[in-house]
Every structure is written in C-alpha cells, then in structure tokens.
Length: 401
Picture 1 (cartoon, one colour):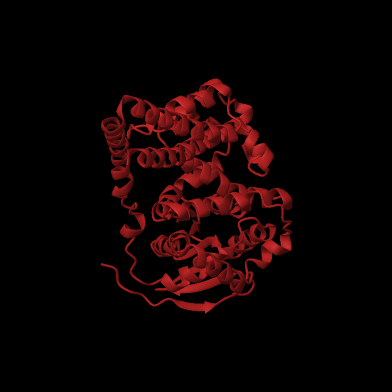
Picture 2 (picture 1 turned 90 degrees about the vertical axis):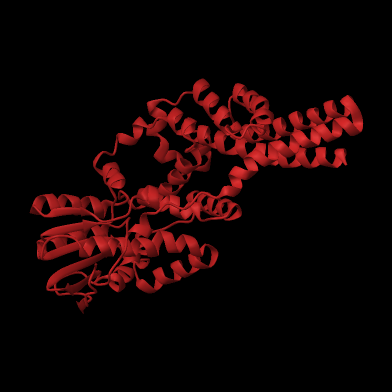
C-alpha cells in the first residue's frame, strides 16, 4: 500500500543550476528534474552542469532497457532479421518505429548532434560519478502497442499518414526552434493539438509515461536524485510525485478485438456462400465467372499495391497468386507471402541496413532502400488485397441476387 506524500517544490531554478531544473523535496530527499530537448546542444551542457553541481546518488533517465541497449550498442540494429520480422507479422510495427525515429534523426543531422545525446551524457556522468543508473521509462514496445492497439482502423491510417508526412517534411528547423519548444507553453500547445486529433495517443504516449516515470523516480534509491527527462514530461511528473501510482494498468497490453478474428472467418464463409448461391441460380458458368472476378480483382489490387513499392517482378506475381487464396484463408495474409518472396529475391545486405538512417530522411531513398521496400511490400500487399476483397465480394454479391 502506497502512502501519499506531499512533495515540496522548492524552486524552479536552484542557483547555480540551469532554468530547466526543478528541485523537489520529497520526504527529505532531493529530486532534481532536468527538462531537456532530445536534440539539443544546450541540454547536453545542462546535464554536465547539473551532475557536477549536484553529484547525485542516483541518475534516472527517460530510457527503457531496449532504448538503453540501442544507445550503448548502436551497431546492434544492423543485425536486424528481416525474415523474422515478416514471419512474426511485425512489419507494420517496425515500419512505424522506423518512421517515428526518423524525425529526431533528421533534426539531429541538421543541428549536428545525435538524437538523445543528453541521455548518452547522463549515462556517462552516472558512470563517472559512480551513481546508480535507473532506466525510468516504460518499455517502448509496450507504449507503442498501447498507442496503436486502442486506435480505430481509420485512426491508424490517419496517424500513419501524418507520421510519414512529418518524416519527409522539408521544413527547416534551427537550434533556436528546438530550444523554443522546451518552453512549457509551447509544449502545452503541441499536446493540446495532438489531443484534438488523437486524444488516446496523447494519453498513452505522454500522460501514462508521466505516471510511470514519476513512479520510478520516487522509488529510486539515494537521498539525491537527478532525473533527466524530456521537458514535456516535467509538469506531469511534478503533479504525480508523492502520490500512490499503480503501474499494473500502465503495463497492460490492449485487449485484442474479436472483430478482426470474426471477419477473418466470416468473409471467406460469405464469399463461398455467394459462390454456392450463384451456382444454384446461374449454373456452373455463373460460378466460373464469379471465381474469375474474385481471382482477377483480388490479385490485381494486391499486385498493384506491391508494384507501388517497386517490388521485384517475382514478388508482384506472388502477390497476384497469393491474394485470392490468402483472402479465403484466415491463417495467412498476402503481405506475408509477398514480403518473404521479396526478402528472398532481394535479400538486404549490411550496407542496406547501414543506410537506413539516411533512407528515413528522404522519400526517394526510403522507397529505394531494400529493407524499407520489404516492409512496404507487406503493408501494400495486404492493403491491396483488402480493397480487392471488398470490391470483388461486392461485385459477386450483386451478381448473385
């Protein structure tokens, strides 16, 4: 049972610390919240200043184990197993992660600083001072699954479109713009705008993590704690510190909707029923024509989708052949078949993986990168097959009644 505590906010800028620091007294422990921008030279300097002045017992960072591993082992992502991603049906999930990471990488390239450099500096300072390091953020995979899992189909398409658009947006951003975003009023405006379009995204991406970060920070050992977090989390963490926080709901994955599973089995049953009805009403010739419609429409739409990804001709052929069959088989999808074929005929090389950061900053390079192309093949083949199923099914139904 947690006992509610009353944190005292002593000052927003304890001299000689930067203005981005909030000092909180919690049961006699001093907690220094350092709000940063994730692509900022000034934030890196602030980390050095605070660590040297405070010399904390514990350093909390806005990282989870997987993001920490990505920082300390930056070359590890080059071992990405594309075949495994497709087989485990994670292509869309990985594609969204790549698009989201590209935003900070693009800004970092313009400003000449690595995204998350202030977190790297915090890790180094903790090692230098012998302070305990606490990875205070919720696992990024849980966060993304909670964000994605509670969106409707159309919200997912809308969010994906906005992510892609922002990833390849050519608007110039200078370092002063990044620093301006650290102002609380600017961040509140951004969060309010996000809440209008995607209230669930803001709740699960920001608000829930505020609670989780606050829990980890207040449970961190030591009398003096420095917590390095994005500036957008500072207010939420301040409000949550000292209060009982149940993290179990924050770690719970969204329940799987039964509707997709029902549709997976219902659509094949409807199509087969329509073919049987057509046979009894129009004879064998009617059924042959309906089957031809199903094969051609479903196959053509899936093949067109794969063609948009500039896939290999063999992959396009596989999409055409697989889509009419997989649409009637709930256990497999056209995108999985096409993705595996594309990965087989154009197996990504180490150089392709190494060029991913550059590819994520350019629409042309993104479309040409073999790794991205495989992920696009999976996505577009499935979308094409879905449209083909709807159109062919409607056409067959109209002929059968």
